[in-house]
Image 1: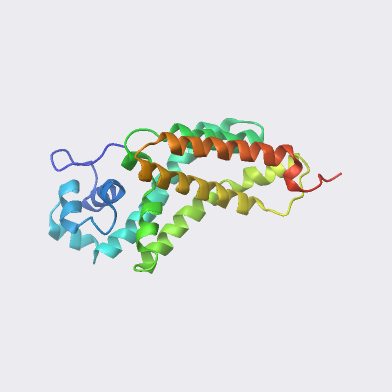
Image 2: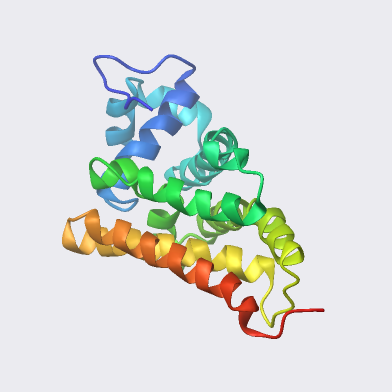
Length: 213
């Protein structure tokens, strides 16, 4: 998605432009370091327009997390990994797709809600909760394919589809942190490769417990 600028703001309402600006600026600078003036400049709107739509920077943060969840949901719903017939291939295809989109500048592929959670989990609980809803809501989209793959292979395990789906997000968020720490996206892609290998081995070994008859 193109980044809005003062010279060429994205089409849409001032509210939408502010949310898109928040997506890009916060991923680049962090929530605390991003000012309302920064957001208005990036969105090409006035400060009056900001306060017309949002009571505070925190309110903008909550709305940005919700907007992120909505837009990324559409993005992943259209991704090609859904086309695989085998549910395990869909799960592994999801992992491959996540690796493919780790490209460009750090701010272009890292996660807005992950970035905000790390900063505000103790200071802004409303933003934290909106970010959690986004992260776990996305994880939940993986659960049907994981459950179907477990049934297809007769796997009874001491882990659940929900726990494995959550683990995928833990690895991805950790991969983004390592990329930020090193300034190198390759380390994030390596982590995603390991996630794929882990899932393959997990299903190849019957999920850690005996396979059902």
